[in-house]
Image (tube, rainbow, N blue to C red; front, top):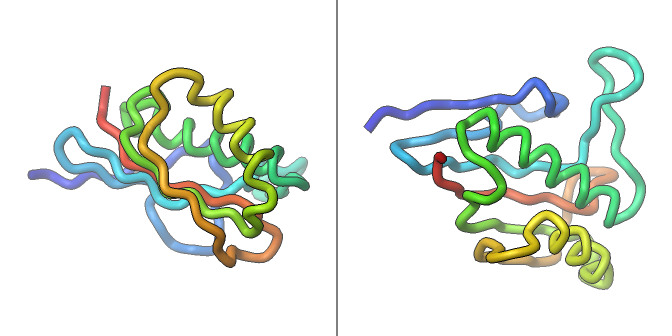
Length: 129
């Protein structure tokens, strides 16, 4: 089975040298996405404040990578979600439900220590369209 890698120019580059996603056959494995957003100057990035804003930015980055790989949010099978503080779960979940209003994917959600400034990280497994 041929392995393919995908990157989206809509997702600002981070420090880690990774592919945004890798696929084999019809399965797409998306690396952990965070809420990094393109900054005001080329090559810069910002991180929004607050769990809800970071969840929204993270899911937008996930969406961009899935689309670059030939998939979409509607084709996500499973996610792993990491929050720095589970006390903010309701803020996370409210945004989550707006992106997955019907038949959401299987989900694992746990509190974890993330990189500086990040409150949310999400990885995913999806099928191609």
